[in-house]
Length: 172
Ligand SMILES: CC(C)(COP(=O)(O)OP(=O)(O)OC[C@H]1O[C@@H](n2cnc3c(N)ncnc32)[C@H](O)[C@@H]1OP(=O)(O)O)[C@@H](O)C(=O)NCCC(=O)NCCS
Image (cartoon, rainbow, N blue to C red):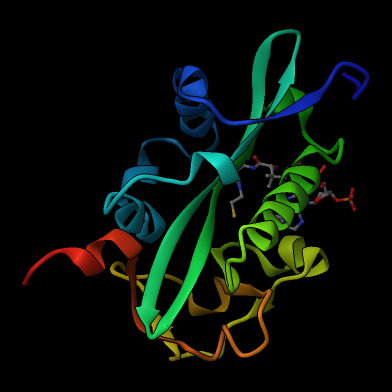
């Protein structure tokens, strides 16, 4: 497999069925019980900030972005990020993360957070969020809570449990 025919596009609803299959392949049925999934259930993701990689007319990788809130802080949450096994280790995951971060910056989002492996995301501009600063609605390894700051001081404003930003408007 090579990068020769791989193209990158903003996500559209037409990509949804293929993205679902890619995420099923990458994360299995356990994906529904993940902390990040629980947050994403709270509202839609941001299609304009989410991207797919295509090869031969098929979606072969996807990254999604979702608006979240934690205390006074606001950010985007990156994920899921998944690349088909046929196309791994070609730099497609890194490229999708870079595109998502660029789009977040252009959309003036203050920060991007995610739950993921620091060895992968560290070189892409993510740092650990100090333990105990934020929590997730389901158990998560706190060392996997990472943030990429766009506006200075934005990550420090994130505090307490992370929820989908739309949940803030829901009357109690
Ligand atoms: C993780 C994933 C998105 C990486 O995508 P990719 O396009 O294959 O990765 P890239 O080509 O951009 O980068 C490959 C490099 O990252 C490394 N890498 C991949 N996954 C890694 C991980 N979890 N931790 C550390 N390094 C990782 C590879 O070893 C490779 O290193 P090298 O460049 O030194 O050879 C892909 O493997 C995948 O879909 N995995 C299953 C789903 C998943 O785990 N998603 C991430 C959720 S946090």
